[in-house]
Length: 407
Image (cartoon, rainbow, N blue to C red; front, side, top):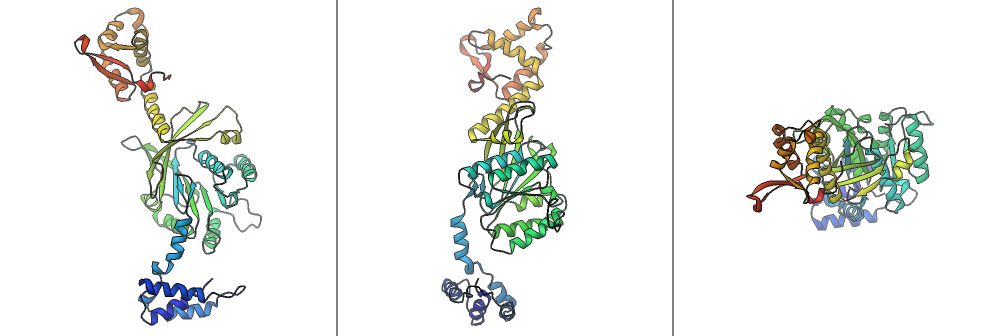
């Protein structure tokens, strides 16, 4: 620890400019020469007296970034990704989605992979789990112990001093004043347990705290929820005031593309906000057998790249289009499969509708056929192309990338 205040006072009182490179270098040299001897602590009274000599302007000058260039450069040079291309070190990241979207599963699965790969030190990961019931908490406690990271909940404090998330915040505030934050990763599950999401004033205090933790060397990861309604473009809306989105660095939404009953679960993760080089879109997959243990599901979490995410997102659109017009699709698909070239014209499909054997029970009519075909073209499932050999009649066929798709 250094007697920085006294050094700054000496230089500023002599008219030195902390933004001047020579002065800043002098300050750094002076600081190095005035290191407090090992085992001793700086005298708070002398520091207070030194600061009291400064005018308000000089006090502001004493906070100049030029005085901390070495420290800032060191932090930047040493910064990496907590999760490669997803969570840069030293940032505040928010992942949000609807209930059961896979937020916790994804983050724990990817962080355990990072621990196994030696990219993340397990003793530096603190998972603050305020969102589980007793059974879920106990299962994750065993997982945390197995992989060497810390999980905690404000309800389980042997000292009895911590009894709520608010008490935890006091501890974290004290932590932010120390040199112990370097390399820490703090995972908050979920955000609404630590601050009221619709109260700007109370969320401000929380975000001031976690920003201070980041400036001290920590990385903060928040899990949040999505509004039950979608925006006009069909995208998820974060559940919380706009100030929260303004205060974070990285923001991702999670959208499952598979049914909850499917064994193979797929989730598209879309970047909403970025401050740094991160993936704009990626996907995760995992297997959810009926009655499978949580740890087994966790072990199956796999990260897919951006191309896979685009594919899965397109598949989600197609599945929705088919689900909304299932009988129509079964009829159209049957007409395509019946043709040697796997295509059919509108005229041939209208003719097929006049065949009692084909049309019976499928609920499709010539009146709705055009709208149905248009929906499947818009979804990207079908291509509509003219055939010059047949007077430019319009033919429909599956798009090449969806030729083997099975609903």
